Every structure is written in C-alpha cells, then in structure tokens.
Image 1 (cartoon, helix red, strand yellow):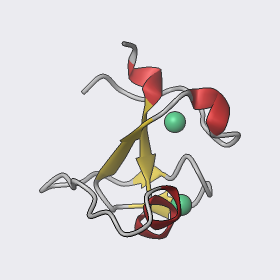
Image 2 (cartoon, rainbow, N blue to C red):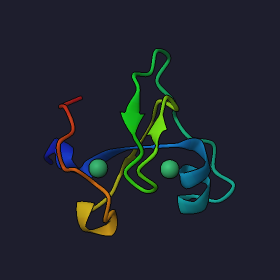
Image 3 (cartoon, rainbow, N blue to C red):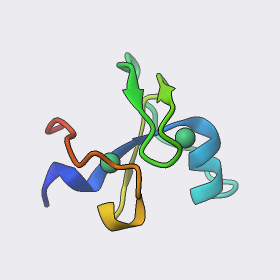
Image 4 (cartoon, protein in one colour):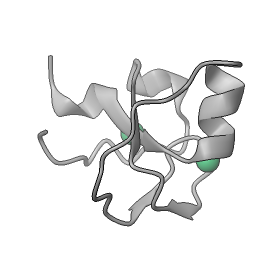
Length: 64
Ligand SMILES: [Zn+2]
Ligand SMILES: [Zn+2]
C-alpha cells in the first residue's frame, strides 16, 4: 500500500475519527500538517485511510 494512505493527524482529529481509542504515537514526532483539519501538529499520530476521505490531504507524505 502506498504511503498516500498514511496520514498525519492531530490529537483532536484522531479523537473524532476514533472516539475513545488511544492513538499510537511516534516517540520523536516531526512537525506535519494534519490531513483532517490542515493545522500544523506534532502529535506523532498517523492514521491509515483512503486519501479521498481527507479533503485537505496533500497526498505527499514520506514513506514510513
Ligand atoms: Zn494525508
Ligand atoms: Zn487536525
């Protein structure tokens, strides 16, 4: 699967996507733009989903 499906998301947006679930976070996160709200975030949370579901997604994520 291509990396276009792995999106950085901020904490509040993850909460909306997966209410009540504890996200997996990177230990040393980089500054990224949240694919859901578009704001910069250092949450270290990555979420796998069809990029069509994220209108703000740049589809330009690095491979991880
Ligand atoms: Zn994305
Ligand atoms: Zn967000």
